Image (tube, rainbow, N blue to C red; front, top):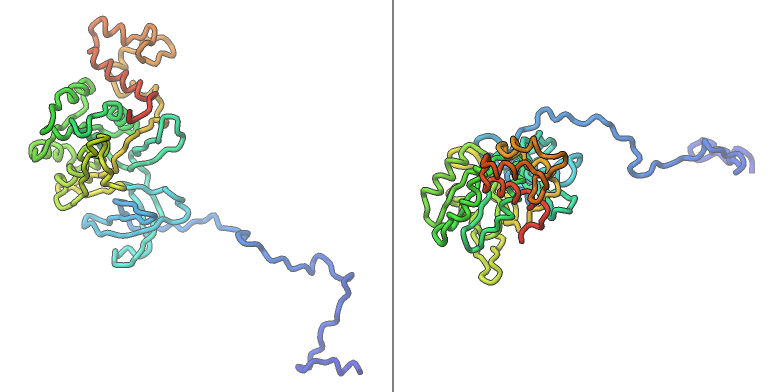
Length: 349
C-alpha cells in the first residue's frame, strides 16, 4: 500500500510513531496531586462585614444578633477561623445572607478582640483550656444556702477566675427562704465582694441584682440546682429557661441548661446563663498573681523573704507579722490563703 493510502479521512496525515528510545523527560505529563495548587496569602478584607454578637452556639451553628433591634441571624464560621474559635459573647463580623430569614445562613469571617475571657480547665493539672464566654464584665457566682449545700472551694475558684480575667465578681446567695445565709455571706465579707441575697418570691433581692447588672454583660456560674435559670427567668421575663430539681440522694442538681445562652436585659445589658459545673480547674492561672486581687494584703508583703508564696505555713511571711501586729484583719488573710490553697486542690470536693 502506497504512502498516500495512509492519509486519514480528514486529509491529515497522522503523526509518525516514535520509538521508546526517542522519548525524554520533557514528554512526561505530570498531573498535579490534590491540594498542591498554591494558595494566595491575600485574604478577603470583608470590609462590608456586618457587626453582630454571638448569643448561642449549637452544633456548629451560631445564633447572632445584629443591631439594637435584635435581628437574629444563624451563621457558620469561615474555615480560616478554625474550630471552637467563636464563643457566646464574641463580637463578630458577618457576611452573606444576614436577613435572618427562614433557611438562610450567614458566615462569621471575623472575631473582634475580646475585652475579657472567662476560661477554665477540667482539673488543675489539665493543659486544655475551655473558654466559657467572652467580653463579659461581671461574673455572678451563684450559690444556694441549701439544697444543694454551698461549696466554698468552688466559690473560691470562681473568684480567682474573675480576678484573673479582669471581671468584677458578684456573689449571689439563693434560697434564703429555706436557710440562713449569714454564715456564707460572712465568710466572704472580708473580700469586699458585692453580695446579693435572694429567695423564693424575693422581689427586693431580684431588684438589687437587676440594678447591679443593668448595662453590663454578666455571666452566671454555679453548681447545678443553685437557681441560675430561676434568676434568669426573673431578670428577663418571658425567657422561660428550664428549671430542674435537686437529687435528694446525691444533693446535686440536674443540668437544665446544656449550653451558654445570652439574653438581653429589659433595661439594657446582657445576662448569660451557663450549664451547671462540678469542677473549675485553674491550671491556666499563675498562683503568684492571686495577691494582686488584695491590695491591702499586697502592701504588707514587701518585707516577705524572696520566694515567699504568702501561703499558710510560709516561714517569716509578713502577713503573719501584720496579723500579730493588728494591722490586718485575720479573716482577710484567711480568705486569701483559702483562695491560694484552692489552686492546689481538686474542685468540687
